[in-house]
Image (cartoon, rainbow, N blue to C red):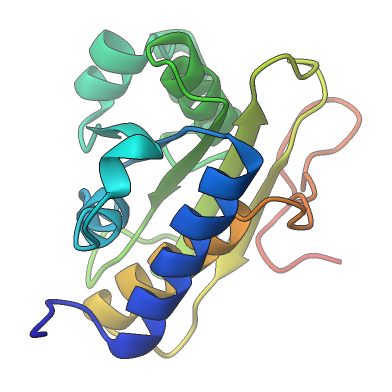
Length: 187
């Protein structure tokens, strides 16, 4: 079968669908920098509709606000590429779906748009589970260095799929006690 995606990602997507199906879980994804690639990859596999509830492509800040309910104050304060925004996107995806688990991805795929604090290749992930504590932030930022736009996006897809696996290690928050995001790459 010809696919738009590399074989290893297809295999991982099949595993995500199979394991969530076995666990009786439905999933949702909220995507920004990946532009729907996670949902596209999952739907590349026949039978995905019994596991994938829906995908939200919220590339613009306005879409994050309108579709997922991310507050403009949050984006203005922390930025679109932040733990706070990714977490709000994941919670919004749960709120606006019938999913049991949601993963959100927001980042800077480049080649432009980066800064010293958030260079190109910065991608933030969050995972929220229905019935989970909304104060228990499950989010992390990654820096995919020395990669082009396509490589950054595909690496982000891989991370998002891994977070959708039942029993996957939850991402750890890179936030300080005051809620401010640590500098990317900081210990």
